[in-house]
Length: 375
Ligand SMILES: *Cc1c(COP(=O)(O)O)cnc(C)c1O
Image (cartoon, rainbow, N blue to C red; front, side, top):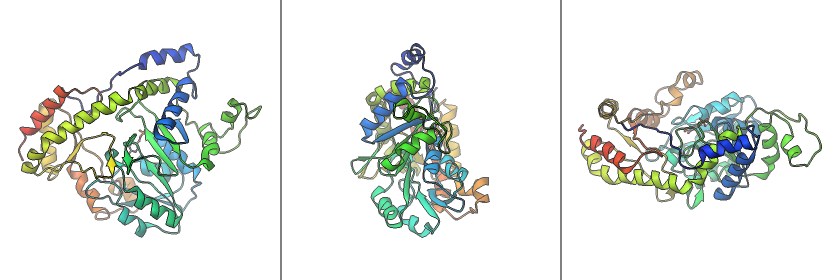
């Protein structure tokens, strides 16, 4: 059987969990949380990385940090996970939902400006499949209109645009370490902060609105309630698992690249014959090998494709449903025809198994099943 996703122990995960008990430190910001912060900061070249309990929570922290007020708006794609919108809606902003580009399925930078109003506070690009959005154009628009960029980089840890890591373009970026992502601790995330004006308040918001982080650094002699905040710090047990995965960065990325490249090498002829389209990675983008997706010619073919693979015990999946047409999206004013590309690709997209447990023999089995499928 080839699972769509399968967890793997790749290094010191279990030893490090034990170490948190020896350290007598299971709560947050212990040895391993600090090691994860240092790893993210040095490997990406960001000044400040803070682990959070999820990517959703990192986005919520960003929403709190830019002081959203009722009536404010943020611009985000329809083709994404709910949290990209929910985090901002929860903190008072109206998401303005915009269509994606037909090639990369990323927020269409040419549609952003027409959706900007006097209420717009931020642009929230999602680097879909770890293939970067057109960040130079998005940065130009953000600068011109004085808007924040908050990157949803859940798919894109170690992706680059024009040689620069995704997650380093926005005022903030949110990472995910959910079980389905390249690096995982089950549930987890990180907020990357690229503007020093926000460091101190981010620590306070993450620590329930207290200045406890400064207290621990010996900068003040007692800590107290100073601002709004919540409980966004993950347990050091989770950070221990994550740090063990970070230590295997090269192994994980290499393994995923081999799988991705093999799909991409074998499938072109079959895809042309059967009307499927393979992923597009523009020249300027170095991807993270987060997912391998294809676009089926239509919904019926995709349904039959997923079913045929399943009969051979190969598990492929589809996503995302257009957010502007979800129950919540409709309540926000979404209607059919608003985002034609999203509406179309959402019926067509299928993701092939790609995870840290797979070997080339598994990939061969997936490919054999696919090559036998005819439209
Ligand atoms: C997985 C994902 C999230 C949410 O991540 P959590 O860590 O589960 O909160 C947000 N945005 C995108 C694009 C994702 O794929």
